Length: 294
Length: 274
Image (cartoon, rainbow over all chains, first blue to last red; front, top):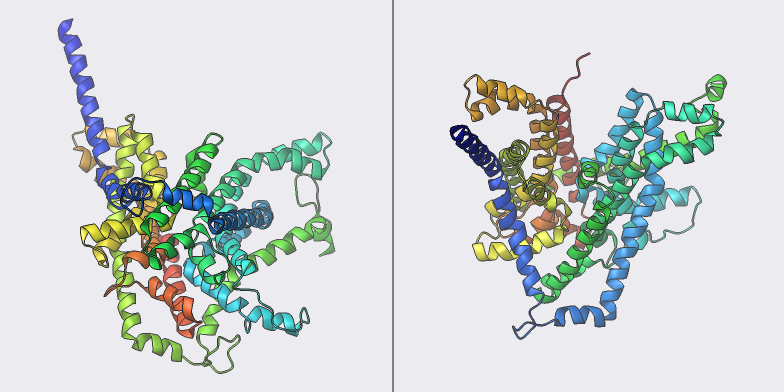
């Protein structure tokens, strides 16, 4: 009796050890993330609370609250992120819907048009838009020859150019999860709705659309989060007129070598990002967000 | 044509004609998604100082300029080297981690998973300045080693997610069967599990290569000196002017991406039994 019990306890201990060993397989990855990401970011956190005199101080945060220019930067960041997300939803949803309705072969072909830019270098795509939208660029040339406007207009190096570039880059992040949730819908639901007397419009809005909201929500969230920390596209296409938080962080370090100010901004950006993710994770599974991204 | 327009297209009997607007809209969006990048390719073969489309005089002078420039060649070498090494490091590390998390099922697994995917959520600028600071302390700033470490961290979430998903659909009792027949766990993994998730592993490897090859923001901070990456140099010259050489480099980068994607399609996709 006792022998059986010790045996059982021993087996359980063995199993626990085995599981710990297995878990240990992930230690190289965890170690690397700790060294390259977690510890340095933790140090930035610390630096943000150190004043110019080397003592603990909140001056980096106070400056952020007091200064109007910081308020403007946060406003710009939210505005650009919000507009980009909204445009992605307006443009991406119809395309995802179109693809979900097509036969498999055509849908796969259309999918290439989404995946091709998705995996093309972000820098190349930003550069392409810079070339297309510049004053002597293709868009101006064609618009003038078509008579849309008379003189070359400024489309890039401002908010419009930034938005065009960012929507182009973010669209796949929205389309992929939305398409996924549309494909998962049983098409008999629509038949049933129709059979029960719903008009096509009514069936779409009360049956189809609600079933796609998890995908839409996950995609929009991913787009918004990525926009908040975006750097390359606004830096190139914004022409210095669209200053986002990440750009201010970079200039704080590259131009002013002010680690305190840069860190404080970084901490606020990070906290905002995780706050939004945390709130969102109460409504949907974290895995569904990441699965949407890639 | 008219018959097609009148034919019902959906379960709710909307005809093709009634949703012609959707088809037109979708085609416009798809064209807008693809052309901006592709149009760079013909432009890179222009002889002009300014980027023209279509080019009036075709030439390869910008390619010559690129291949003859020592700086660009150096940067290209660094980028390929970094991307290749990142692939070699991130893939086994990530696969091990995904397997460990999947098989151990202990309490910390969820927390560890969240930690593994944080590099995807943290704004890149923060990763960049954090790594910059750490590398100054570790004395590996501007080295390929440092770059590979940082890019591996950025690629890990992809590897863990892709192989983790494959492991979820893999029947672990097959591995248990191998072990009960006397195979040690590592052998059971290598001969039973790994061959069955190999498509996911190949995909993950190619994605890690591309993650590193395309990465700009982190490279801006921690690459430089003798080892700037291609993207870092490109970004710097973009801030100054629109140099047609960039168009030729962009074309080469599109070629690299396309090759990787085709490889992923050929080797990374599990063929469905017909």
